[in-house]
Image 1 (cartoon, helix red, strand yellow):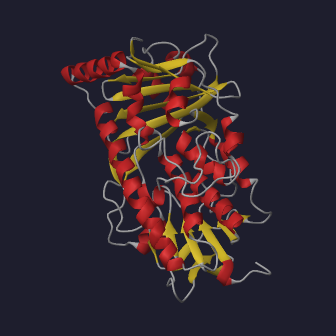
Image 2 (cartoon, one colour):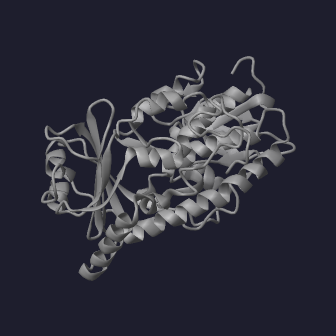
Image 3 (cartoon, helix red, strand yellow):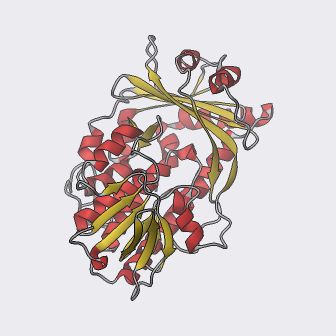
Length: 408
C-alpha cells in the first residue's frame, strides 16, 4: 500500500455486507482501508436481504440510505398466514413505515454489495486474498498483524468481518464455544415473479415457515425454514421444497416450480453465548463474527451494518483506539446479545410442531392482530427504531438522528 502507514491503516477481513460497510465508514473517517476477501470475486450468494429502518439510518451515515429506500417494493397490505392460506395477522407498509420511520426494503444482496463497494477507492478490495490474524496488537502500542499470501500487513486497526465461522474470532477468543446449531435449516431463492398477483406474506406451519416478498426489479425473494437434523441436505433441494411446501397456499407452489438449480440451503447456527467483548487489542469483530443470530427477525445483516457505522464513530484514525474500541463493545454487545436472544425466542415459536401447540400459537397471533396491527409491529420495538450515534448527512429526514439521544 504505497503512501500509507500502519498508523492510519485499517484492514477488514471479509467483504460481506458488514465488512464493506465498515470499510466505507472507516474510509470516510480518514482511514486507509484494505479489504481482504478469500473468494475470487465480490459476487455474493444469490439471495435477498431485508433492510429495516434501523440499518437504513445506519446507511444514511455513509450517504447510501436514500438510494436504498428508493428500492422499496412492498406497497399495500401483507401479513402472516397459515399453510392453507388463512390470514393470521395483517399489516401494511404504511403502518410499519410510520411506526419505525421508514419502509422495509427488500433488495438482492448483489445490489447492496455493488452499491456499498462503489463507495470505496479503487484497489481497496483484494479478492482471492485470505487474511489470517497473526497478532491482534495492543491498543496503546504494537500494531496488529494480518498474514496474507502476498505478505504480512501491519495495521492500526483490524476488523474481523469473516462470518459465522470466523477465524479472527477464534484467534481472539479461543476458549469461547462459538456458534451452535439452532435446530433448523433454511432455503432461499430469487425467481421471476409468478403470473398471479400476491400480497407479501410469511406463512407459519408446524415446525416450518415460508416467506414470499417482492423485489423492485420484478423478481421475488422467497425463503423457507424447517426443523431438521444438522447436515441433512439433499442433492435436489427443489424436490425437498416441493415435498415440504408444495401443498401450501399460492403462490408457494409456483415459486418452487420456478426454482430449479437456484435453491440455496444453509443450516442455521447462532451464538447464544455472547462474547466477553467484541474487541481485543487493536482488533474488533462485527456482524456474524461477533453475534451470529437466527434469521427469524431478519436482523443479521441489519445488525452488521449498525456495527460498522458505530465502529467508525468510536474509532477515528489517530484517536485513543483503546477507549474507542471499548466504547464500541459497550455499545454493541448488549444490543446484539438482546437481538440474538429475541431471534432465538421467535425461532422456538416457529419450531413448534405438535397440533395443540401450533393451534395455540396461531390463535395468539390472530388475537394480537385483531387487537391492532401495532401489537404485531411491537415485536420490532427497540430494534427497528434504532438511531446512529452521530448526526447523519440526512439529519431530520426519515426519522434519522439529529442530535438527540441515540440508541447504540
